[in-house]
Length: 315
Image 1: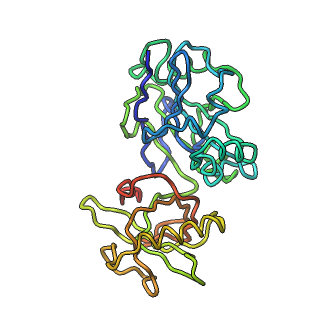
Image 2: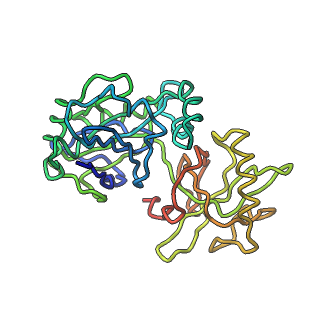
């Protein structure tokens, strides 16, 4: 039978850690959310948006199986490490590839791990209405040792894990109610994320140039009425010289005469306005009182629709 993926359940951003014996905590991995779907004959990898990523991660699809079930859907995060820590920039070097030749070339340079934290379907049976505690035990029973797959450990002291995540420079933690069921496409306080490193996904509405090359982005988020609000100007980050060259070519093709933001950005001098279609993930220290980002750092360009860049990310 065909195993069809679902849209993953999402955590909400929490200002403080939940308390109570029903809560467990897991490390929040700075990677790409991924479902692994096995129908008894082949494995398909599907990301949060429902797009296939089977081509990009062949080490997770070859028949050295990592789950003993006859059919399954696993939920987890594909990560790549840099300096011993998960790096979104590194995993995007794999996720953005679109040809087998490119994957073969980059695969040895960017090894990946699939950090599995849930099982939604097993041996022909949906598990969505089972409590998380039951799903976790089943996951423990069916996962097999594999060099590129790990079962995400759970901890009973969220405060202690969050302190460890902060000390280690990790992105944060996810707290989950062990009684919770799994609602595909849902997002509520049954799962809560507490961040040490703040991030945002924003769309570029303008660029600036230096010596004929794009050197910075003017970024924004949409409100519920479709208006684009300026949130900051970013030039620092993980982008390579090749990335900036590609951005320069894209910017020339997207140039528009009218500013797309609702208000004039602080850095509007010498800006070139572009059609808002290029989306980026950024890390930053905090939100300024003006509604802009303090010290934004570009992590990577991501394959997301511009209307996914929403003001509610500000919490």
